[in-house]
Image (tube, rainbow, N blue to C red; front, side, top):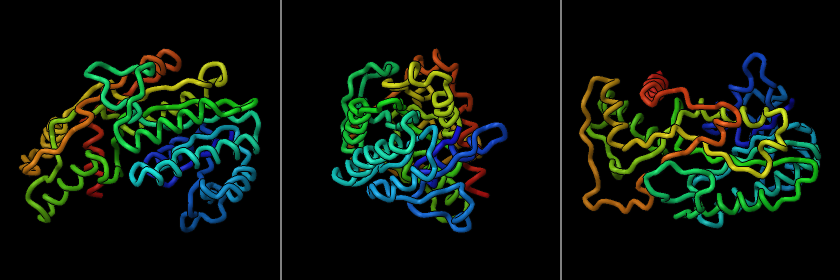
Length: 305
């Protein structure tokens, strides 16, 4: 099976490419906006802009994938930029994939942001979609597009990962921010952790577990029957306060960290989220395997290296 991974240069995309490059797995092709240096001609990456229909169609046609794992998109920006990247870009990709291979299986990565605040209980895929920000709204629109798209002989499914963590995570994510600042404290570049708040709870799941889940779905023998038209949560099933994440880091390092917060606490529109993974577990047997403490230890080690 030839697998095309969009957003292959991103945080999750790099892990997806690594996972699919392991012995016994299909060799992936990564779709990126610009080819990585030194990999211009080795065939493991192709370059195209999701908003450039002609170049995208040509690139996907040249690959003719059996499956597409669509990771590319924006998490921050104006409402217009988010809609362009996450909705229009997805539409262009679906058109290109079906034109290249009418029986292509496609997995579109959405987000738990589509749920907004759904209470303290684990959230099933049947919960109402009530996003609270432009990013979540763009992901709801992306999912609507997938449901309405005429796939012909192809099949499209949606996954909703919860909050990711893992080695190499940028500091636009809370765990990445904490790890960066802890290393800066160790290097004498700062003396406190500076965070917006520490009381919200997040379902934190290791990116290495998540890419296993993506492949468990894409590799289903009858993808059309089992996955097409459905959405699947992927999370740890646990809700961790930001303060609990800091406490785990303190256990790992043996240090204590002072936290500096804004004088005026920010509003927290989504105080907690927790995933119900029953659907993917019952279908594939997938479960998260990496404890958060191990994830954080690996993140600290990778950042120091």
